[in-house]
Length: 155
Picture 1 (cartoon, one colour):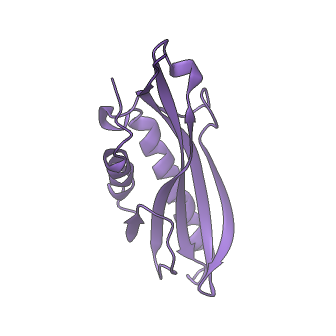
Picture 2 (picture 1 turned 180 degrees about the vertical axis):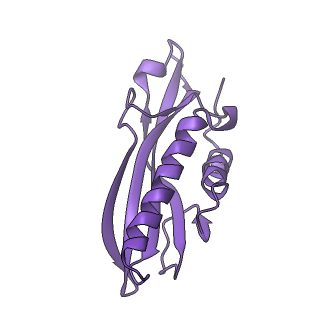
């Protein structure tokens, strides 16, 4: 299976549809937001890094490893306070479960690198951030995907 990395839109669309289909989020974006997204649960995803996937490559073609960040965020202003962490943790677990279940993202990838065979394994880290002077509780989920036979080798 060859992956065309001259157009990232099919991969981005599949990543977004996995998140949106869960029904947890008020917005799902294909970029890190510039402005505070407001009340509710929000998700955004973007590529953090790209590199050759040596162990997945052949003698005449190189496979690619794309590291993704998925940020989940909710304002800290919800009451009772515990509902923010519980809701965000439930959404985070659902996102991680979705990418474990759809291991090949509808057949457009070789695989989601859940355990870190080619790079970093799937991981979620909670934290806080301020955007437009509004405090948000966040989860950053990072993991890699492997795209098979991306760059031909000639020599």
